Structures are given as structure tokens and as C-alpha cells.
Amino acid sequence: MTSHVQHITIDCADAYTLGTFWSAVLDAPLSDDDLPGDPEALIEIPGTALLFVTVPDKKQTKNRVHLDVQPQDRTRDEEVERLLALGATLVGDHRKPNGRGWATLADPEGNEFCVECGAAERAALTGTRLPVTADDVTEAVRLTVDTLAASASADWRVPAGTLTWDCWETAEHLSDDLFAYAVQLGPRTPSVETEVPYHWGPRREGGPWNAIFADPEAGTAGLLQTLEASGALLAAMVRTASPALRSYHGYGVSDPEGFAAMGVVETLVHAHDIASGLGISWEPPAALCDRALARLFPGAPDDADRWAVLLWSTGRGDLPGRERVTSWKWRSAPLEAAPQA
Image 1: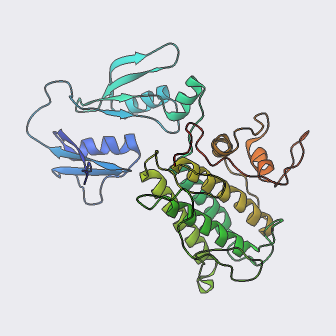
Image 2: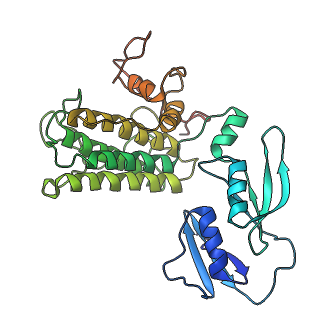
Image 3: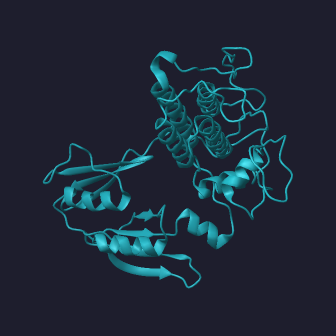
């Protein structure tokens, strides 16, 4: 058995006020039960939570434990300026001319914390690729569901782009793909030789082989709900699985990041298939495509639009000066380490 960090508890003079500051820092809400004057305030964030507790003692010395903050959608320096505007103070500036380093700030009660470069900024500084994460899976699935939901009343029994499946079957297949990737990460000792033995089969000759199907009586809204649920399962498994874990995939043994990347690519390209069939536009973010390409198609062209390259890499589009891809597979094995037996 192991232990889990339930809360990171921070003593303070005013739990609600300090909790409100950190709620703005982390873009995460205080608990619905917390009100001004309460002795405690809670912010739940992925993996743990911050619990602020009002105590009579004043802070006297430097923290022995502090938080390190990494911005997700802005630079380190932009985040420092944002937090200063929220009420933080600059305690120590350890930023270097080459872009590295950090800034030490204090919250309104004097608790020190550091602001570091985010993942994208670190990657740019070191020349390394950005990993595909559970958040990428969530983003891909949510963008897909939101886009397709606008056409929920359309005829989903029309062909999905150039596929032999209709749009309903393709969405069902995508939901099943995400589910299948999630369960490969589930066993305590995943197999590197076979899939988890669910029963897969088609509903019609020539249809996709699925383990799960959407209830037709639930309509398109129900179909999209199964897609979102399967995406949430995969995101949760990727977020909690050990990076050292290896499990079977038909294209090669994969790690959790590989399954995340495969889930992202399946989502983006099948959303393209469905959108083509329904006659709606679909173009996912270039950065999301780029991370998936770097993980699964490391030899793909890097001098063209990232979405166009992903479509080309999966046999769904053309690139000027390059032959069309008619047979493709991705590199599911980890890039940094050999698959383990």
C-alpha cells in the first residue's frame, strides 16, 4: 500500500481571502461550501488540492515547503506580471538572460512560491519536443464533440468522408478506440503481446469492430456522450499511469504518452471524416497536431501546415511535391526508450 497526498495545507490569517487569490492564480474555483469568514477554504486541482486554514499564528520565516507554478498558456514573464497584478509581490528574481531561471513571488500573506517556464517555453529553450498529455486528449475530444454537436440534427447515416462507414458508425468507432486505449493501461501488469480480451465485433458486415456501441434510442446526443465519456476514460488513465508502463498495440508496444497521442490522432482525423460527411468545417489547433505528429510520425515533413501534414500522414490529404500516402502506420513505441518486455 502507498499513501496519497490528500491536501497541501497552508496556514493563513484569512482562509477565504487567500483562497480567492490562489483561485485566480490557478484558474480553479473555491469549493461551493466556502464563504467569507469560514475557517477553511479548499481548491481542488488535478492530482491534489490546496486547503487554506485560518490560524492565529503569524508567518515569521521563509517557507520550508513552497509551490512551483508553471504557466500553461503564456510565458513565465507574462505570468509573473499577471500574478503581480493579482496582489503577489516579487521576492527574488532568478531569471537569466538566456531565458531560463525563475522568479520567486509571495502571495498576499507572504507565502513564497516560484514561477517557472512552462512546458512550451522549456521545449523552445532546450530544442526538445513537447509531450502529448492527458489534457491534449481532453482538448481533442471536447473540440470534436462541440463541433459535431452543432450538426446533431443532420443525417448521420451518410458516408463519413472517404470511409466505407457512415458518420454514426465512425463516431462509434472513435468512441471504441478511445475506450480500447484506456483499458490497455488498466491492468496491474499489462500484456505486451495481446489486447485486453473484450469481445469485439461488427453490427453489420463491413462495419467497424467495436466492443462498445451507442444506444440508437439515445440519438446523436447520446452518441456524442459516449465519445466524451470514452475520451475522459483515456485522459484519466494517461494522467494516472506510470510513464514506465508498457502495453500492447497492434503497431507496437506503447507507453501512456503513445496511447494519448494515438487517441488524439484518431479523434482529429475521424472528426475530419465525420465533418466531411456532414458538410461542416473542421480544423484543429496547429499546436495540438504538431505534438501528435512529433510523437507518432517523427519523420513527417516539418515545413508545412501541421493539420495538412497530419491529414497527409494518415492518407487523407496531399502535400505539394510529395507522393500521397496510401498505406500508413504510426510509431507507437516510445521515442526515448526501447519497449520493455
